[in-house]
Length: 219
Image 1 (cartoon, rainbow, N blue to C red):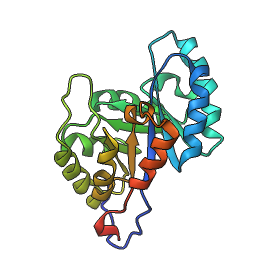
Image 2 (image 1 turned 180 degrees about the vertical axis):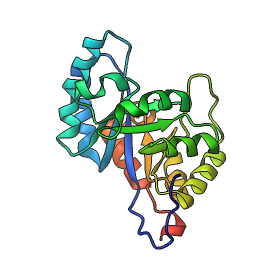
Image 3 (image 1 turned 30 degrees about the horizontal axis):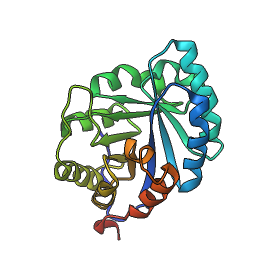
Image 4 (image 1 turned 90 degrees about the vertical axis):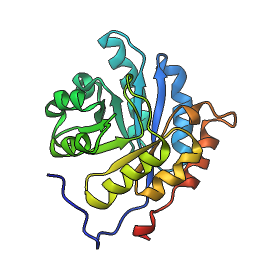
């Protein structure tokens, strides 16, 4: 069972979790990724990959992994738990409880196993009981519709005040970063809005980092 927080626990400041675009040309993205990692404190990078054969996927991961890991940042694959170890990634993020349950034993204990796309409190707790290193709220699986922001905030508040397993709040825009971190998210994931920002990804990430805040119950 996921263990509750002690009220005496000192809560660390929330950190950013970068979610990449779906990458096809890893070499072309490498410079953008390197600049992004210089822009602010980043805890992890969730690497999304366009579909391809296994060897091509592994080659893309191996090209980008050192850029991330040399900064002491974790590289987590979006799916592809079966190749995480061979490609040199630090773990995998599985979207949906069924996908997570099927892959978690192949990842633990050596690799990070993250669970997203959880659409109920029960699913989140089951993922925690099965060994999730974090649960992510606010992202969705392909067949889901995203919940309103206030519902995501409420779920993060519930989790953060009860469980020790970290939670990630997925910010669909820069304006969501402050409420998600204020709710108690240990990490805030930022994705397409960062890479598509007209100021450039590095400037957007620096802006995102400035939006992070501790929740009231941890101040």
